Image (cartoon, rainbow, N blue to C red; front, side, top):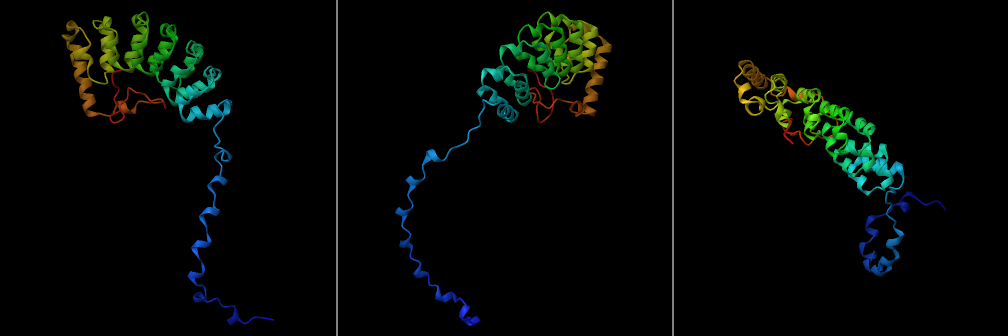
Length: 246
């Protein structure tokens, strides 16, 4: 039999709230012990697999610490870790820290000061230190004493940052090196701090220094325009973008 439209109407007042009794839902019917912790398995990334290890260090270079020794010798994994956080080169295997070809490949994309973490022999290697000071003049600080005497390497460092003259006091009285340093003086300290008293009397150097200071006053952000690698450099103040002393 077909019901009328009237018969199909549902009246709200016919559904009484008191008919839904809270005590019908008993708390003891929901048993906590039915949800067992061991049944909820938290999926932890398996870092024994290279693809997972690679993804982990790309997000956080310090994850290299948690990896096996095998992966700490893996060039691809270590490189990704270092590009994310240069400090993690300290976690790499001694073998990689001695690998000249590998360190040179890192220096193409990272900052020069990572040579502070490499094997001592590489800090006495002309190719490695030259590439390092090209990237970051302050890397001269980590060069061997022998290479701090190398005019080509020192000049390249000074072309990058004149303040690096402070690391090679034996050049304080070398007018050629001093000129290069003043011409690339980012902090304005070379003339007043890092040259000999005799050269400070030189009117040409004095004029060069004055011009450099005036140039900085006119263009305070001139050095901020220099191309920088993607990786973080602890020598850069993020608020002023001025290279600081290590």
